[in-house]
Image (cartoon, rainbow, N blue to C red):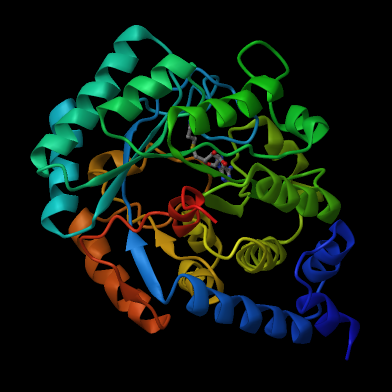
Length: 362
Ligand code: SAH
């Protein structure tokens, strides 16, 4: 048996194994993807769940060096959807049998903001007879705030650690009170304590990042015993500080390739978690998200933000589907998902099986 096959057949991967898998030749990569696809089919099935993505605001107090909506980017036109706009986007998801929505936005911390999200979560529950599942992705908040939103009806939360390597974290974020690696890490524990299905993730192909860092990221997710993951390629944005390092980056196709390998390896390591097919994959390859669904991802987040605002939620360059409305997205996606050999879990929450089975007695 080749070394590569020996690794693929292991029960648990060491850091070195993961690095070898990330460095797989094109031929070995095909075997990695075949294995991860097989595991996906066996453990979570070839069903893709929808999370209608509502990017409710790009107003952000943070200044992350990679992100187009960072506080210091004066070129971004700031917007904040009205409550009615958020609720009608959620109604679209409900009427189109999406099963769940994600509220994502810039990061703010204030009593008014907390109250607003709480009201929106309750509003979404009310308009859908309690049936729409709700994922939040609104950054670091206090344990009390997490609890309030959970009690209001949100039950999943995605907070990417961005990089589990503290040193790298501080190369891509300012090092100050608003950007603390320790606080972000603590927030993950707070989310779990509040009762959420816990999601995290990283960007892949960041400047200064090594395959060793990526291997550590996967081991970190395993150790934290996450329920969900959203990770995708880093894509440079001209109006951000990291732009100056663009010449050091891997070519886009290599970042894409690494991102797919990360998804495949994680699916083998954590068989029953939910893995999102990140939108950033599609910024590089027009059928990037479908490729990820084929080899391990099982969640997709169709953008249902009203079209007029999409241009302003530009975390990175080349973000796909900027000129579309939610209904166009739906038609286009259905065809794409069927092409990837999956069916759509309409009207289902598609909760993390990993999470559900944690409470079961052994
Ligand atoms: N404020 C929320 C949501 C942030 S946007 C939070 O902090 O959780 C969601 C994700 O987009 C971020 O976590 C980050 O990983 C990703 N992102 C931001 N800029 C990016 C870029 N230039 N390339 C790729 N992904 C990016």
